Image (tube, rainbow, N blue to C red; front, side, top):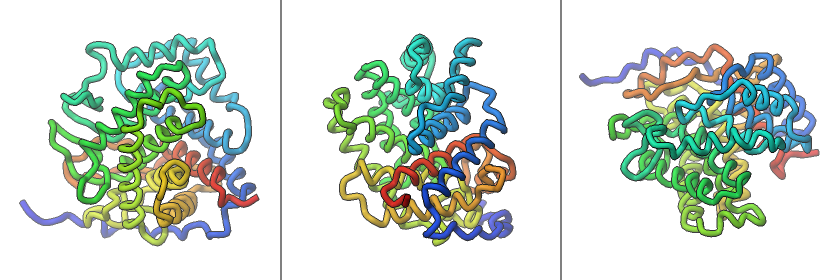
Length: 366
């Protein structure tokens, strides 16, 4: 069978104009951040799962960028779930662990150790022959490097355990070896039964870019002795991230928000996805501090992505046009049928990451 199905792409709604270049004052960013945060809690974070983990880390990032203490609501959430018990049965259950590792709550250390132990427990997470964590048996997905990797990095720093930070580094390198396209530098969503499906999903590129930035920030922070033996991994992650962000910048539309597949495959061209733009934009802005010789067009693209994505923040604080949870699709058309008409926790969380990155940027004016 040949031919492309353009039915859904032809129905794409026009993009919203991005927020103006003069927009990102600290006051405007702080007000929007508080609005998105309030809406996030209003929508509810009921489970110890990946969407909640993205939100918790976004809330922490926002508070830090505004010079505020660790968010009390996040601490209450962590304590409540620790008290009722946490079940880990999938790599996605590790995502809230990043917030746990950053929390000023020593009494939560046993839960942190339990999560870290699960990764290496026989029969828990499956891996490929190279040791790369699989999202499902036989499949490596970009999602894993954020949901599990970011947790491992922060847990390693919190516990002063270099093996956990090394595991984070190895996962980044392993995922890049499988999923980063050698010709373009973009990341595919995942592999199925050992075969990479070359659909360059937007949120996959957000997960991998943000995870790489998180690692580089941890590994290059002043006094990061744990990272001393990881110079080869640091260089590899920097190179992969530079190539990825440069490729994304070259394919960004003028309004800032990529289609759901960032290479604008005809079957999805014009079907925009805001959470990916928010996450990629945040990574682009943060990468400037940890990737030497990052092309200036990447930072410019980061601002376009942030202004483009945040134009979709509704008055009630919802990030509109966020796609629903998306399993690996075997053909590009599959990404054109994912609904994007409901609020999603990962959309809220990635919007918070974008706002925090903009606040922390030297370009954010007083």
